[in-house]
Image (cartoon, rainbow, N blue to C red; front, top):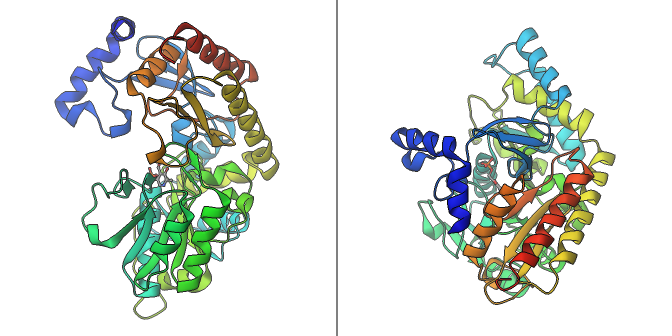
Length: 420
Ligand code: PLP
């Protein structure tokens, strides 16, 4: 309660802005995740690895726009690309553009895809990949996993699909349970399997190699399309998490940072499956979207991937992330806090019963009041993190800020010894 009182005293302008927002937006909100009680902090601007709120506080940004903000808030090369595009080309041209091919070629070569198509979000990428898989196999049912998040209408929180219309379309397994995955997938009516190599929104829980390989093998055995959702994880290495684990999905979905920080999604993979979207074939599937190939994202995404997030940069960035997570794991040893994740993505958890081995969403009961306290105190120390506990590093965040974060976590755990 004291932390909440300090929060309100520190953030009066955010409180006022929230009051106005709630007049027009349900709960003052247009992205449910960003709502936090008593009201969310309103950010005013971002610069490189920092964000600044409406009450004048500066924060080191560990939200990293939920992995999309990899380049920071004002990368000079991306800024220049956007300005040049506006000045020299214009916005959407209502036509196919050559830059679309350039970005498609780059993504196909980085992620070993035969063909790719662009969308405006990861959600759409998954919806279109599923539609393509269904068309290709002629089967509707899709195997997914509890705790999986594949977009706004594709969340499978506690074994049920939220926001979706047709419950019968889904068969929901437990993440990291290879035996169950085999039993569920190897049924005649499954047309596709959709899985994250590491559950992101579900808690940054990496899939074991055994589990992911089992999915791939079972899908192959029955001719179902294996779709790997790399919307979050494609940044974990030069060719995504699939290359690290050794997976060869039939289709992969993408989003987030691959649009240079602008709204982006893509799906692609096997030539024969992607051919269902070839408008030259009779009976092909339509895939539209006014902004799918917009000039800004095609140029910014290309610049970002070809000139900034080069393969060697991806390797080093994720090495820094691994070492950051190891430091957090080391200071939290013996407490209720645990740190999951891979490379440049981390998940912070506080368990109710001291359980620190986390293999699925069901394997931990989170201590939400403790997580809230952590969020508020870290914010008071100048760190912007999300309340869910996931963290995504930004390129170029100084090592001194990573070290200061670890020190603050250590101090939090020391000060609240009786709670943790
Ligand atoms: N898939 C995964 C694994 C995600 O983490 C997300 C977003 O967080 C999505 C899909 C949806 O992407 P978008 O928010 O761009 O629709």
